[in-house]
Length: 267
Image 1 (cartoon, rainbow, N blue to C red):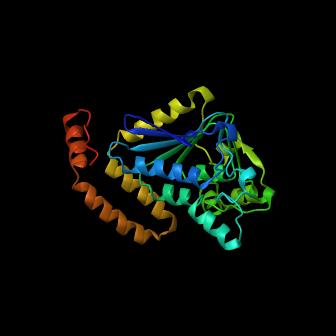
Image 2: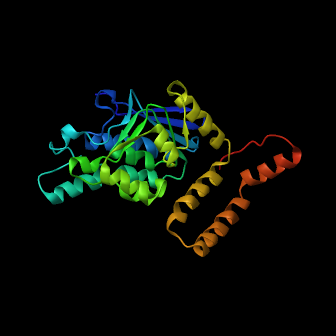
Image 3: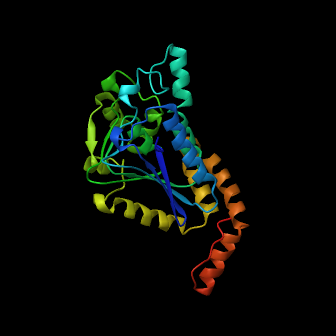
């Protein structure tokens, strides 16, 4: 059976491709969820990786949960009892936002096509989203008589604001790439044949910076969403104290004074 997630590294950037185009890259089993988690953790643990790109093979980013499997007990939908169903969600699809949220390296979603249901939620668990003109987004759970079981009702309002998130969740309607750009769900629309290269170029610009500073910058951005400013300032002071002692900070300052490009160790 082919791997659900394809892992490719180019310099300090890893691209994770959901690689089940026949099912529109839908998550159909516990193993599919485990595959994405394992690939993301592999990139997170590799000191030679600074940035992760997430995309889909074929014409879709991800159709979310495989609807055909929802009644089959594959830890994607309904199980034999409500408690078992709850455990399925916890162990399978919920493992993905938990993992991506804790990874300190920047994650870019290159949304090449439909991102529906859990696929839409998956994009909101990333830090940056860019889209092709063919992309569309739908928080479509209500159309199946369900709610987002993988954190979308927490993630989506933080990206597009409460009103737009409520509109998407209550109607289940899809929005296209232009609408996604207008509401801040994506930061750029790129021609389909340039999407991955644009994502890589963005990732490379990010990866050119010292990895410790990137990791702590992402941590501050994440933590700031639920902290008071005084508490955030305390953490910022502590992180800054650590970075002032880093080799890469000293190299950056030295290179600036010497008017040359810095050479970072990323340690």
